[in-house]
Structure formats: structure tokens, C-alpha cells
Image (cartoon, rainbow, N blue to C red; front, side, top):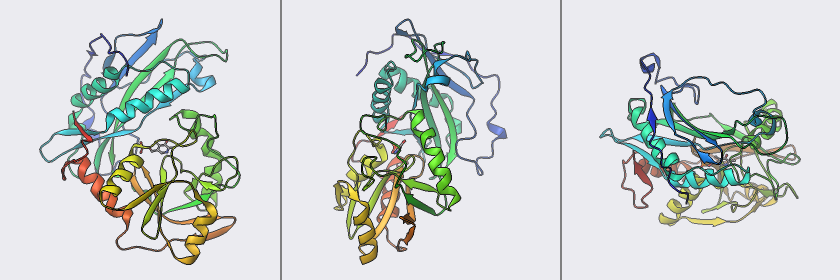
Length: 355
Ligand SMILES: *Cc1c(COP(=O)(O)O)cnc(C)c1O
């Protein structure tokens, strides 16, 4: 844990709100941002005074290191409103911890706990009206940090900016998701930055994903870079496989992002007496299980979509369709998890945190 900042947050309010111009029924994910943002710079070895101010573009020097060497990390979280107009976060300390792990891996300074957590709460509190009631309505939270120090020298920056921006979002439904299992490209390697939510991990996926899109597939399930035999995870989701009545998901490693949704679903499933094994599933196992009918479900798990069922996968130029299930684990776990997030159900795990 990191020392608390001694600085109170300065608040500069926007003159007017753009909220009345937003069509909350037809939101496109991640396109509209609220009236304010939080910003805090790191200079001379210390975090400066944080400020909450009107959302606006910012000026950066063209030689800022983020543009040249990709020192950039982020998080993705959500806020939910219950029927009593209270706003809740879901396991925010997990995101803080992961953010600072990413920071260390990218040779960036760690963010103080209270800047991340209290700053986030204060910003969301100011934007309460942007969090709409009703299941499926959320406020997506995007904390991030970039290197703002100047100079085209391949060395870590000495100046950084930590920011939080907020985007109202409807429950994310990406349509039927078909995936290709990676045979050549990799998103991560041992010793690399796969376990960090670092910007470069995502740009590295764009080209292989574009090729997959051209073949009619929405996403790629990545395999281990060394042998391409072990199933790992998808673009911004961890992946679960249900063979008979057991759920399997890859263990976290240097190559895998330690998802909050993943770890929550594992706990939730076990509490419902569903057997969960954290172990590598081989591509051959998946194909065999599909052929003998024991493969029941494959689904992605991540903050944006919560649970995203996969309808089929392609491997070695063969397409395999998954059965259509009435009572899927995916649907059941999604329901249970979102009921906790929206305070519809009790929260026996102590996951929810009031804003
Ligand atoms: C963010 C992310 C996930 C999901 O993490 P959550 O904490 O559940 O949102 C999984 N894989 C990758 C690569 C990610 O970037």
C-alpha cells in the first residue's frame, strides 16, 4: 500500500452540464464522457495537487514520451446505482492494486491509494446524475496514466499524468461472438507485459484481430506464445470453458491479465457448488470435448460485458459450433454477479463499496 497524498483535491466546476443533450437509451460504449475529469501530475519525484475540472482536451508536447515509447497504463471499472439512488463501486481496491502493478512493470510511479480511491469517489459523487438507475445502466470508469515528460530518448519519463474519466454505458452486448484460436500471433510472452493493463498490449492485438474480423470472427482466443497449445484469454476478457459441469479457466501468469470479473466469477461459482479448475486447457482438449459433446459453454469474462457467451470457434481452418443451452452457467453467473453489483441481492463477499 502506498502513502496517502497530503493534498486535498481542488474542484473546478463546469459552468453548465451537457447531460441534457445525452441520449441515455442509445449510448455507444465509451464514446461520451461526463462533465468533469480528475487530473494529477507527478513531477520532481512527487505527486502534485490533484484537480477535478471540466472535461476538455489537453495540450501535450509532441515529444511527450507516451507518444514515442508507449508508457501508458489504464484500468476499467464501473459504478452502479441501486433503487435507493445510492452509487456503488465493485472491488475498487482490486483495480488500484492492479493499476500499481502495471505502473511498476512500466517503470512508472505508483499512484497513492487515496488519490485513486477517494479521487474516484469524489469525481463520481459530482457526476451522480450520470449514473442511471436500472440494471444494465452503468458509469464506466477509466483511470489511466501517461508519461508526459518530453524528449525522444528511449528512457522512462520523469513526469507523469494520472487521470480519471467517466463514460455512461448501457449493458454491453456485442452480438454473437465467434472466435479464432491463435496459431501464430501472440498477445503476450513470458517476461513481457501481458499481465499489465498497458496500452501497447491492445495495439498489438489490433492487426491480428482485424484479420480475424475479415474472416467473420469478432475476437481471438490467444494461446501461449511458446507452443500455441494452451488456451489463454481474449482481447479484454478472460475465458472460461465448461466441460460437462466443470468450469476451467487458465491460471493467471505473466501472460494473463488477472481479471476482477474472472476472480469474482470463480468465487461465485464455487459458492454455488460449481466445480472450477484454474488450469491450462489445451486446444486439443477443447476440440475433443466439442466433438464428443462434453463441451457445453465457452464465455469471456470482463468488466465491459461482464459475461460474453461465445457461439463458436475456429481452429486450423475448421469451425466448431457450440451447443445452444437453455440454462447456461454464463447466464446464471452473470445474473448473480450483476444482482450483487446493483445491490439487488445481498453481498456476502463484501465486494461492493459505496460512493
Ligand atoms: C481488462 C482485461 C480483462 C478483464 O479484467 P476485468 O478486471 O475483469 O475487467 C481480461 N483480459 C485482458 C487482456 C484485459 O485487458
